[in-house]
Length: 156
Image (cartoon, rainbow, N blue to C red):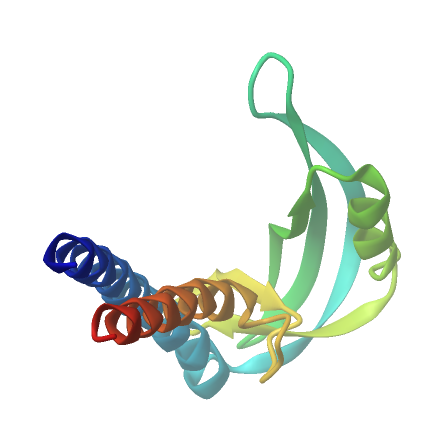
């Protein structure tokens, strides 16, 4: 019985460590996204190009990227920049995301005031914009729950 309890406690500690690491790892992502929303000015941008491009991951795998070229004005100066709005291994999903930005359409963007060529499209207080930190912290919470269950099981 003591051996079982020790094994469960060791597994709980391992899960708790993973939980803490994932939660700590997600904090900079949350802060970065919140900084964009709080401090980067917004402006209207025109879509100059909207394409799906293929990025090779390995010899047998590829990733599709929705690449956008934008034109906007900052302090009276025109800025053109390219950004990736979406990446996936599924072409249809990527094409659908690129189709949200037809050439000639106008969209609100946020740009870095220290580097105006760095821009974000679709920046908002939304699940989509915070997807990466939410997924990472969700995984951390999952391991935290497993740790708590293992601790409870070790005390029986």
